[in-house]
Length: 192
Image 1 (cartoon, rainbow, N blue to C red):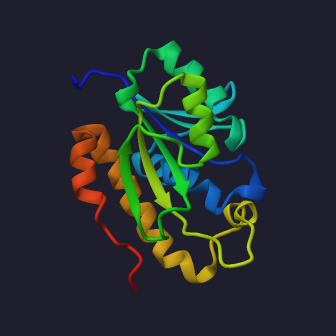
Image 2 (cartoon, rainbow, N blue to C red):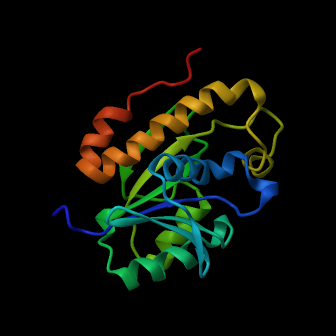
């Protein structure tokens, strides 16, 4: 993998103020943090918000979560981005809040945005940065849970998660997946 290869980091979420700070928008929140820290701005292009970052791009699809592949796949093909240089940042109910995990390939794990990207690309050989949002409390529908905002008492943990995830993307971009995994997969950011 040469340093000149172009890359794409996709943050998954839903557009619009109604969804801005919901659990499902963890991917958008990470990319917003990264863009602000790196001094790059998003501009609307087609069905996505795009920001150029170094030799690559940050993307927030505007298609709504379940159709994310509609924005991602054509861009990947048009720019000739190798799948191993595609990172998708998304929320994950199978991880507790305070945990992030990088992985390569595999199933969508029920995450509909990831499923849409796999379907649109026709393969699953890209990297993911999973942002833990935890399971819903008893009696709460998973759909309502992912579309609910982070609670005030979760804010401090969320802040640490966003910082760590932003740094994880930087490490992934510069040093690759294995280096990012060894630094971030074991972290527990949920402590007080």
